[in-house]
Amino acid sequence: QVQLVESGGGLVQAGGSLRLSCVGSGRIASIGAMGWFRQAPGKERELEAAIDLAGRNTYYADSVKGRFTISRDNAKNTLYLQMFGLKPEDTALYFCAAAPYFNLQMSAKEYKYWGQGTQVTVSS
Image (tube, rainbow, N blue to C red; front, side, top):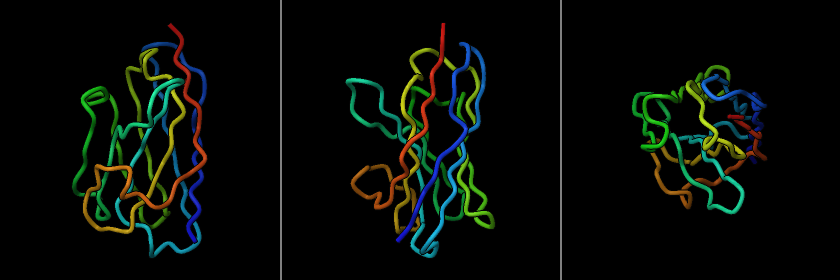
């Protein structure tokens, strides 16, 4: 099994920044591509950023492009999401997820392992 634990969420003013971390443990060899999803109240969970196993290819949703940066440190089994220029509409529960594939994954259905989420709240 794989366990993913997110941290780094919190309350921040609009325009501020946060860095989320997600540490993996357990069957690390099963972790390939990873992604950050978020779910706001009353909305569906959506992929905001994804990265392949090697960390060479990334994907960003239009809503966060230019403001968020996804990265990973495989030696530390850790995924990051650096968020700048936060907006109230970024308020959501943020989840990290891992898929057992090398290449970038854009569909939630491909992600097999999920963390419990970390809350990000941006005040106006």
